[in-house]
Image 1 (cartoon, one colour):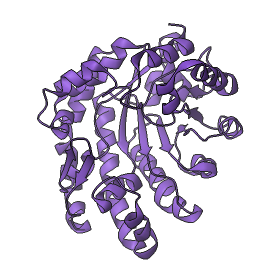
Image 2 (cartoon, rainbow, N blue to C red):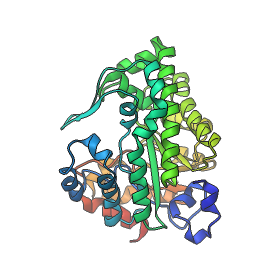
Image 3 (tube, helix red, strand yellow):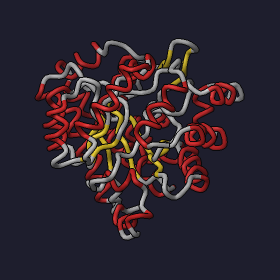
Length: 350
């Protein structure tokens, strides 16, 4: 779906979320939360018991669509994000991926770059269940509420593939210095696979896309440009070369002051900000891109007057737009539902 297809519609029928990504000034910012679907919801925990394992859950369109829609029934969010995981691409490229209960993802031995490159075309078909999930959600979702597709960004996905699990990423960061050609080759494969995967999501009904660069911190400026900004720009170009004009949000978590260089070079329409983003950086970025974030998930979990004050502060400093209200990372599993509802009401009035 091209952005122009949406913008041809009358303004009052366009999803508020997409209008914000088109750099419009709105009466209030749209709102959605990263990890709004999942373990913070009791209905999700009940649904999860029906799946054999987490990867099977993600590849089951019926259950994944239900998980995607659950927070949309509870809260007045302006956008849904398809329920999936950033580590589905490695599995589709031939690396074993599984999740240990209470511990998180595990990945088997990293296949050769050549073998993974040979699997890129087939990888999209292996992820077709996510496209079916998107079709189901789009059919069930109200037209004024947008649907977001996503992928893990190449560097972040590469860190898991290299380390074999979530970690401090020492091996992956060392490779960036000691074996740059090998890392760049892996990232190039992931760029190609990600372009195809995101294009499939758009064809299935995703109206916006987000790249999750969860581990953008602790990178020197030149390395950040090489393995974060440049691959994101390559993904954007790859999609545009396919005729896909769907707006894209890049979320380089932990980028610090480099987020401004990222915004200038990645070619994205929206930039997600983490909890450390200053009011001044956000206002500067708003001149050229839509910003998203940066409420602290721990504050959302804590609740109370401090949460109310921070919500009001974010609305005051950035709410004139273009701004999408969101967190600086995902919802923490034990966050009280009433805290989420309280913030959503404070932003939307509903």
